[in-house]
Image 1 (cartoon, rainbow over the protein chains, first blue to last red):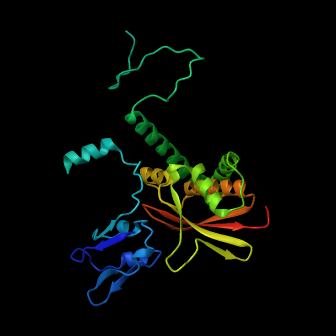
Image 2 (cartoon, chains in turn green, blue):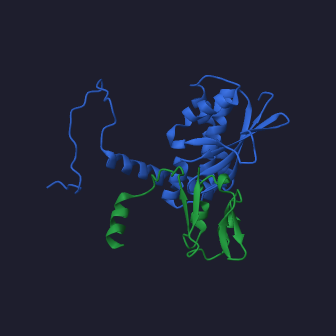
Length: 83
Length: 188
């Protein structure tokens, strides 16, 4: 079962995740002007919301994390030295 | 003096006889990774160039290529007209690199929906080499390369079930893509 956590301190209330989610998992909490999770069970863990969220305010737990074969270890190694 | 290309890696030397077939490909994980990334870049560039030259026709070309592959792969497995069994066989054909599941929203009771002479099932592709390739080369999803997988899936299902099928994209994401497989009963 997918578990989604929203960091309310980080969420800027832009509503991008609400617009982008194909299964209407999110809704805007008009009072707080933050995103809230309303249909967690319908989340298919596509993680489009992660990609679109400017604040990286969400976390998905217990999902199938797709293999990231595109990661170049040489580049990652260099980046790790810099960051 | 003869000019020699300088390389960091040491050249591997060994004996070769045509009748000696090695048991495995050989090489370490770094070799595989590099080969995979080079292939990803090649395929990505090819897809992008194809789109540049042929426009939207690129999708049809790649779809046809995928479909042919799917039909060939489908010949290897047992024929069935049961959708669940066909999905199981499709998962064997596509392998772990195209890890998919059937998917339904919570308000739907069954995975399949009957619509006249059609059966509709939603498939969620969680692992996909095509997606990895697109991300490696910085190309958008839903492009010609995605049609290779659509063609492959449709070709395999058509071959296994002996029917006509089509696949539509519902949503693409960085971690999973949702597709709708429509099976048209009543022969090809």
